[in-house]
Structure formats: C-alpha cells, structure tokens
Image (cartoon, rainbow, N blue to C red; front, side, top):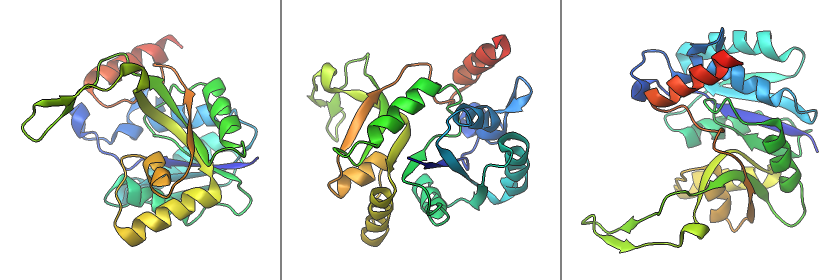
Length: 229
C-alpha cells in the first residue's frame, strides 16, 4: 500500500525560548524537519510528502524538501491557526494514488524505520481503520475534578501515551476531518477524530526515543544524540 506523509510544521519555538520555530532549528548541520523527513525517506511505500507550515517559512520549507527528497512528489501548504486546521489543509492535496495517510510531528526526528513499518503494516489490515504509535505509561495517571481533587486513578496498564506517526486508511481520515469541520469537533490528535466517527484504531508499541522536542531539555537531548551520530 502506498502512503502520503503529512508533517505539520507550523509550531512555534516559544516553549524552547527560541525565535525560530522548532522544526527549523539546526542540529548537526540540518534542520529538525530535515532529520525527521529522512526517517521516512527510507520507506519504499512513501509516494508523497506534504509539509504544512506558516507563511514566513513556506519558501524555506520548499528549499529543505528540494534538498532532501529528490524526485519524490511533495507539497508545501500554508497552515491554519491550529494543528487540526493545518492537517485539514494538507488533506486537500493528498494524492489519489495513496491508500494510507500518515501524520507525523515535525519535531519527532528519532522515530525508527521499524516503528514506521510496523505502524504501516498494522494500519493496512482490514480489521481496523488505522493504527498509531504509543508507549505504555510509566507513571500513575490521575483524573481530577474542577477543584483539582483526584476523582479517579485509572489502571496504569490500560494507559498509553500517544505518539506519531498516526496512520489511517485515506477514506476514513478524510471522513473524520470532514465530520469534525461540519460539527465543530476539536481533537487532541488525529486518532481522536477517527474514534469520534466510530473508527477502530489499533496501538503499535513504539519506544521512548521517539520523543517530541518541546522543552529546552528535549532540545539538549536531541543535540547530544544527533551530534554522536
């Protein structure tokens, strides 16, 4: 099955204390976005890349893609005010030849080829509408009420922390986003929108190295890993 890759890259660098948006910070000679792209370029079934970014970085993103992806078809799309709107904009240019759509955070540059392939293989099965990468929670989760009092402690072995990629059958993801737009539904990730329309989504266990660069400590760790490589 062929798949299109959507990478939302319109986030800011505010939490990192940087003026440059996170995907465009340079580590070991390449932007974080370029490092992330290269993880997917090793997958034979990739047939299209769509990066969603802000107005100010449309040209830079195009230049990064030209330098990294060779002849593989790509699009650079203007993002929206929220991630969900950005992904919706990307869906408008998804190739008709794609069977699956993968959505992956621009600032998760350490996802492994094995993890991507495992998620693709699971999402290709007829028994589901898609699959997402996640890791078991190592911490106890607490649910609180409006007064910040603990109302419930879920079983830890039932709690998983969602990562990306999140991969779905093309028709299902498009239907989920269409439903969300028509009904004013906001999801915290793509899977939550698919779940909202009754979709069946499987978990593929990933690893903690597939972390999202969000805070200064994350950036320091990423610099250490990429510098060694």
